Amino acid sequence: MPHTKRLNIKNSRTALMLSGEDVKKYHLRSLKPVNSDERHRLNAWKIAKMAAHILHGKFSAQRVTVFGSLAEGHSFNANSDIDIAAWGINASKYYKAVADVNELSCDFSIDLVDPVDCYESVRKSVEMCGIDL
Image 1 (tube, rainbow, N blue to C red):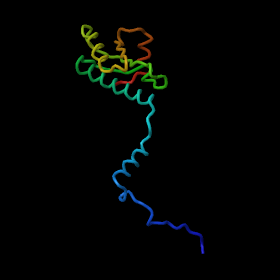
Image 2 (cartoon, one colour; image 1 turned 180 degrees about the vertical axis):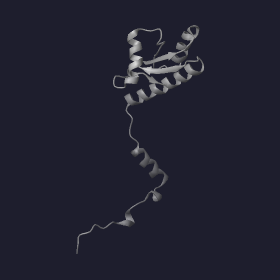
Image 3 (tube, helix red, strand yellow; image 1 turned 60 degrees about the horizontal axis):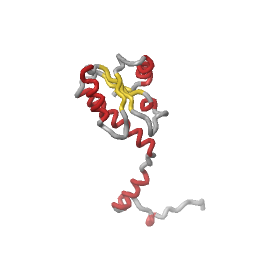
Image 4 (cartoon, rainbow, N blue to C red; image 1 turned 120 degrees about the vertical axis):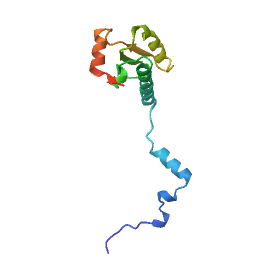
């Protein structure tokens, strides 16, 4: 007689047999933990997207791009700021735009640059690794 494994069905539980508490425990185990650095980076992206929304809507920016360490990813850390380039903001409203985006979070400093009127090295960084929002 060939060797076969026997499955003890009466002791096996299906998903339908799990209690609400068991389902919660299962889902908690299945969630991949997010470390604090990753959480910080994800929060920075959230703030950057909020800033882009303000810059497009309130200040009529034609294009908004994240660049620098957040866009590059590997060098972003707990001390990093959020670098944003925005095209088309009226010069008379630029400092108000800077103030408004910096009010979004006390965890991050946001550097807003006009890529038309900035250092060449900054412009190259925006062009090379910028991510449009």
